[in-house]
Image (cartoon, rainbow, N blue to C red; front, side):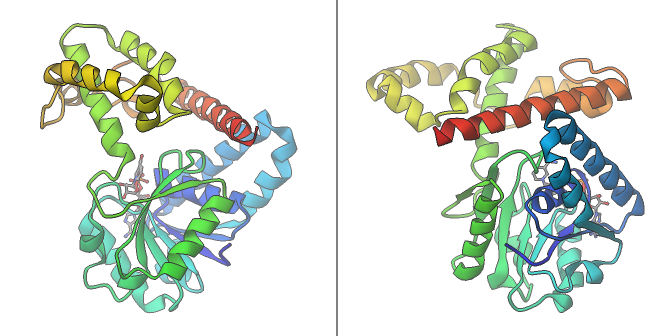
Length: 315
Ligand SMILES: NC(=O)c1ccc[n+]([C@@H]2O[C@H](COP(=O)([O-])OP(=O)(O)OC[C@H]3O[C@@H](n4cnc5c(N)ncnc54)[C@H](O)[C@@H]3O)[C@@H](O)[C@H]2O)c1
């Protein structure tokens, strides 16, 4: 466990990360230069605690203790001083991330591990010129960070093994499933797989094969269920590799191999249909209250599924 964790950036990911580690019993300093972002994070954390307590009343005390463990600050120095783990979740902008590292570097201890939650920036680019190069990793969490178990870890050959091992140990203790990459790769593993599926889903939609509802249903009721239990290689092994050899030979020529964002996504974006946050996207989501309900429902379903999966593992 860590004695003190600093989470830098209190947006969508930062507020989830603070909850995750606080729920696991560690004190958190959540930093953001924007007071409004901290207020929003406080409200999001309270909503999430409420949801869990409503669904699982016996967890009330644990959630109340977790919420008490999160302190908020607009001062980067205050956030990182004394922290043995610093997790940066600032905006996905190399200039801003580098400014954050420059600002905190003088206040970091020699044993402090720094991690970035970047989704797309290269490890070497991020850490270039920083004095903590051998104490830096990418730790890529998924939204909502306090719920989704997967964390992709990218390190350099000279990253200190003791610090990485400690992080992996803490993640496992907090119920996470760390996956360690052999080398840096844009999109890491999971986002590449998700993007490949989204590209083909858009292709099916655009070709008039089915509407969005039917495509989503096919995924939820078929591969989605399987993928919660087995990965693509396991599924291929179960099905028989001779069969999959034929299937891939027959199908690959007709799969989409476009190199830009698919038309259905571009069309929605140019019409201001950005998804849940804008009230519409591939579907309609109604007003603010309707959207909150949808997000809450998603989180509830998700939490139940994750709990069930843990039970399956232990049987
Ligand atoms: N949203 C996702 O689904 C998701 C998933 C995985 C990884 N990520 C990555 O996590 C990071 C954060 O994403 P997000 O979705 O939480 O973004 P966000 O825009 O919701 O939050 C970013 C926060 O950083 C704050 N910020 C601005 N300047 C800062 C500074 N100098 N120091 C510290 N904080 C600063 C902003 O005020 C904001 O609150 C990004 O690198 C993103 O690529 C996002």
